[in-house]
Image (cartoon, rainbow, N blue to C red):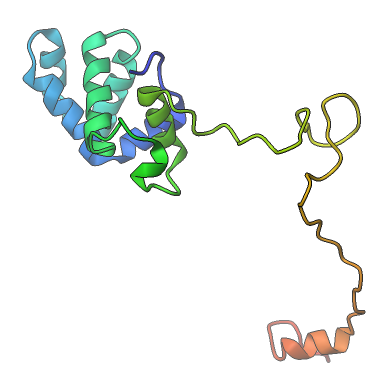
Length: 166
């Protein structure tokens, strides 16, 4: 289960999922003790999410309820598989964070490049910067550029706003 408080983008995703925060609120309100009293009095998304977010790091009951609801509702209880097997190809970053927190499967780390010996840091030379493309990769080159005639370019947009010559 999640060991630390989720980042802001994970909470934003959680807040947008009405089924999730409502179910968390319902489970916590149905319990016993002061937690149930606090959550039973809340109805609005902003109130519920703010309280869940504040309680999550320090309250084990809240943490277990949130983790269980995310696992059961968002991932349909299928946390025993890989994320790829769920079929969510373009899942939001917040959803991916919850998956990693609940299952331990790393999703946001880019796969290592074949033949790369270091980390590419955005240009320059030095240790750890790879300058050559990996074997088999094709490099896009612009070799034969035609000269553009401005008259033809203006004809393509004939009568557009501001294109009339006076």
